[in-house]
Image (cartoon, rainbow, N blue to C red; front, side):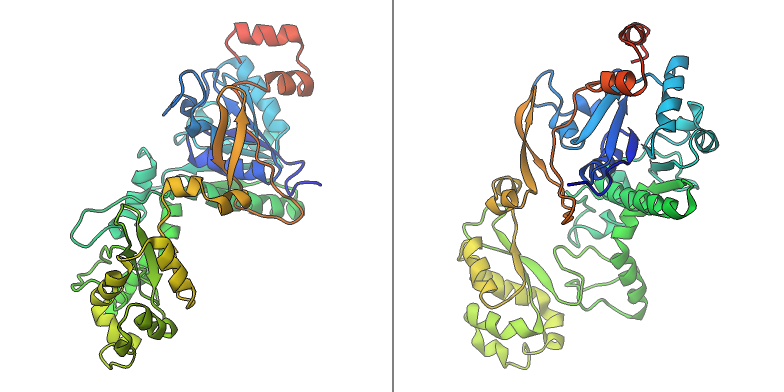
Length: 409
């Protein structure tokens, strides 16, 4: 069975997370992703190692389904080989600092001369302006994209989210841009530039907070549990901030992840009052309507927690689901990695690695009926030098040996 992106060659000049997360998605979709690394390799091969002299989980979990070549693009021969690789590729992706690829001699204009059909995607921290040259990292993007200011509890400091919305969130946005450019190329025959900034991607994921910033001009946000509102959207703990109030309520025995997130819809209030042993609240005018409950959301969830805290979270989940009350248990990383349903769905996957042995990684969340993704291990450093330089570019064994001696590969 053919893959959705079969026949698409991606030259992956990315490192760390934002770029590799994008190119791995393309690889899962069937593209031939050639990860071009300096002879020393992507820095994450050595970062956060749990085993000595073995590629880290940081690297392996972001670079599956790719082929790896090494190339010193600062050397004249390296530039010649890069030129040939650009000529043979459909997509080039990079996430170096601003201007780094230009300084190699590969401006957008030069790349277009080499290959007018190529889609050239760049991930940067920020757009044009005063932030352009700031160094960007995951949490910096969260800080400057609106996420941290609106995450946490009202009296506490701003908090980062554990979801890597700055890096991997930007990667997903980049894939959308690349796929759109490839589709447009089918009509125009031309490639184009795709630029995605981490700050912009985080802001796109935080758009509901900009919605609420504008709503503040017309008064307090009733769906928030906060009592006081200034001129900025406040941090509101675990409140959903949407049309239906929600909160994480504690369960027995009270461990750090013994919680269930519960959303209280109008239709769910009556069965919920039965479950918590307070059926009279279903008819009490002080509690019976959403409008009556909104001013006392804290008290409402306190009543629910008095019930939930006596039961294990899986039992709370069962009882709530029996009445179609929207809810979900807080799953720890340990519970997720051991979850049978996630393994059955192929989203938690075991992969064999020649040096590491078996490791667990995340499978493709993108499910295409005609193009299922097979999750393969990450490549060893330079594992495919012979395949690409030798078999595809026609270099001889003697040429390859010379390139290695000269520090080109």
